[in-house]
Length: 136
Image (tube, rainbow, N blue to C red; front, side):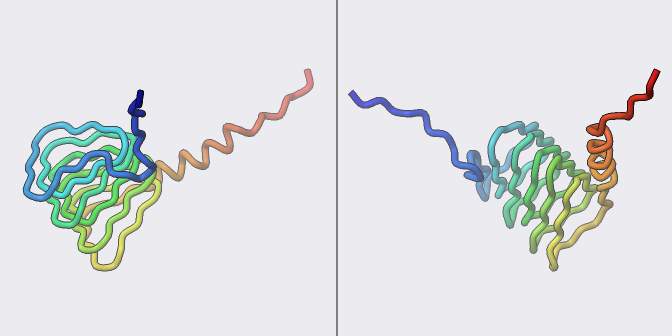
């Protein structure tokens, strides 16, 4: 008797795809890596990776672990780990992330905020140090 084993996606493997020509409006939550190549309007929430492919048109509030952009995004983006924008990407909105990469040839209109992530990194080592004990 042959048993089918549950297949686990490899790290970085795309688990969901919204292909070219597809249009979706609403709230997207996911685990793993999702690639958008079509049109999407709404909200995106995840702790994992969102890939916005070349030709994609996204109008959304995005809050994810990482985002890689080659298409067009209108809306604010918050990424817990990193934001990468590669040519011919276009972004119109504010970016909040501890790590930001913008390639030559990208169009970015908005503000980027990285100080909160920097403050969190500085506060973590200070919290880890034991405070000196004063003799009684």
